Image 1 (cartoon, rainbow, N blue to C red):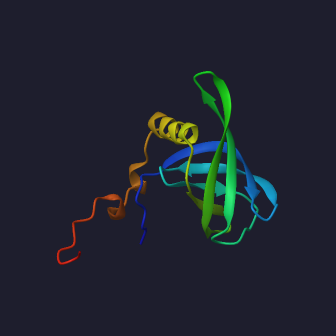
Image 2: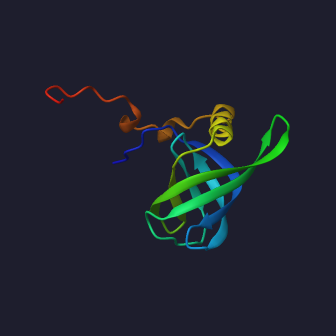
Length: 123
């Protein structure tokens, strides 16, 4: 059962990975949502470790480099899933731009992406 809050869209953007312990590597971002990325990489970082994901994307003024602070939330044999921490204004705008440019993948939408009903009796 998936517990995703945001729709994922397919992308293929090379990224640099810079971990808090000093390890660096690279990967390929395969899907993007408002909340994070899945990155194909051979690196096997610790779950819950912090990472700065760096990517170069096309902006209105040409190519620009953005930094996406993130937390590793899961690992697979193919790569890592990361959840964004606080994005600066430029990074948030570029994530939104990338999401709006890409066709969404309806097979990736789950019931968890739907708004949840309010719980009665909770304060």
